[in-house]
Every structure is written in C-alpha cells, then in structure tokens.
Length: 128
Image 1 (cartoon, rainbow, N blue to C red):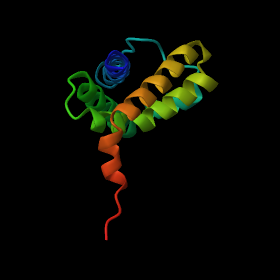
Image 2: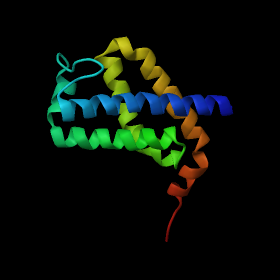
Image 3: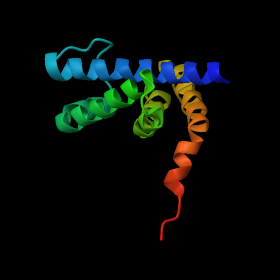
Image 4: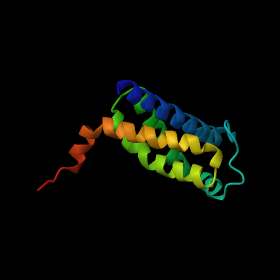
C-alpha cells in the first residue's frame, strides 16, 4: 500500500505542478506551455478572471509542493481536492481526451484521502 500512496502523491504533485506552471506562464509571460485555452468557454473565461486565476494557480502550487516534498501532505490534499473535482468534471465533459487522467486523479485522491484519514478525523470533532 505504501507504493500506491507514494505513486498517488507524486502523480498528483506532478500533475498539479504542470497545471500551476502552465497557468503562471500564461499570467506572467502570456504563453501557454501545454496547450491553448481557446475553444473552451469555461476555461477561457476562468483564465480571463485574472485575480481568481492567480489565486487558483497559487493554491495549486502550494498543494503540489506540499505533496511533492511530503510537508503537511494532508493539507496539500485538502487544498487541491476541490480543484481536482472541478478539473475532473472539465475533463469528463469538455476535454474527453483527458478522461484517463481524470480517472487517475480520482483514484489518487481517494488513495491519499484514505492514507490521511487520521489527519482529517480531527477536523470532524465536535466542539462545545
């Protein structure tokens, strides 16, 4: 199981690092490293919302670095899980070429969620 957790952690870290680098390269240099956003209404509008796009890419970068360096990986997973959900929906409904990646993202997120379950249980405690 440790191998699967390590693979899931590095896969998510690498994928979100690629996404973050591509997003920041567009913001800073107006260049897409891994494809163009034209033709996808949702994605192009998201990119044009510059402040939100910068915030999203910052969260992706922090989450990816957290998973990559295994520093507070439960926090990194918690940061990228909502982004993973939206990304998977985008892949499934608009960019069907990436459906295998969406499946891998879902599986990796579930594997890491199970691995970090003890960390997340503390969030569900009842407080007086």
